[in-house]
Amino acid sequence: METGRLSGKVAVVTGASRGIGEAIARAMVTEGAKVVLASRKIEALTPIAEELSEHGEAAAIACHIGKPEDVMAFRDAVLERFGQVDVLVNNAATNPYFGPMMNLEWRAWDKTFDVNLKGTFAMTHWVAKHLIDRGAPGSIINISSVLGLMAAPLQGAYGMTKAAVLSMTKTLSAELGPSIRVNAIAPGLIDTKFASALTSNDEIREMILSQTAAKRVGQPEDITGAVIYLASDESRYMTGQTMIIDGGWL
Image (tube, rainbow, N blue to C red; front, side, top):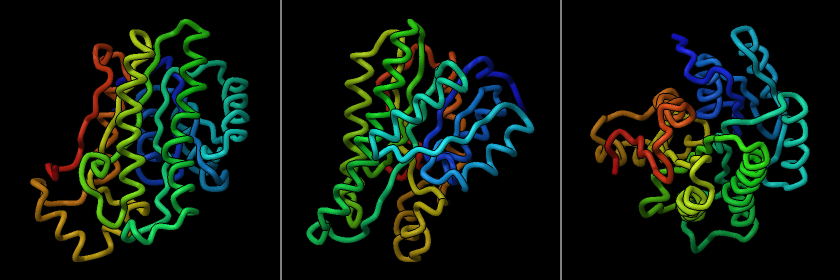
């Protein structure tokens, strides 16, 4: 049901071609935002943007956030199309290596940090500068992970980047306040292709569920309500915080 909580706002959602990012983009359009969907491959984004455009305004623009030149080109395309950005959802992430940290190769390390950390900061940097130049308020929402708050066996590099995103969230909230709010969401085990290494492994999935109060794997839609709240003016007194949405795992 549309309530117009984001009417008049332009939102950018990275990693929007599937999973949590796609669900967030859909929810934002429903709430009245104009939404830019970003991902590496335009082919995956276009059908979603076309469908969402039947209910509001959405645009698909390709961007590899781990490449600074792509981020700058993306910025120019977004501002040419919409003229402004009010909300940024840093959802794009990668996790190319699954295994013990002692076997982690530098190529996988570099890719993980380039996308999850440098890419998140690069997107945040231009949006924050744009908001400052406009003298406008804004909301930046970083999708982290519970693995940034706990030991992350078999996903050590990923967990480190997500812990760093939480630190970045706190520091930027202090430096960019009061008009620009920066918050994070730490999802638990969510049923997406991205998390398939966990959800498709019976032993790992059951181990996690045995420690989870909700006794189920989360769905992408379980994350969208918190994002809408953080993107809207309802959360105007909230910044520097991490919302844990994990079914009670932690």
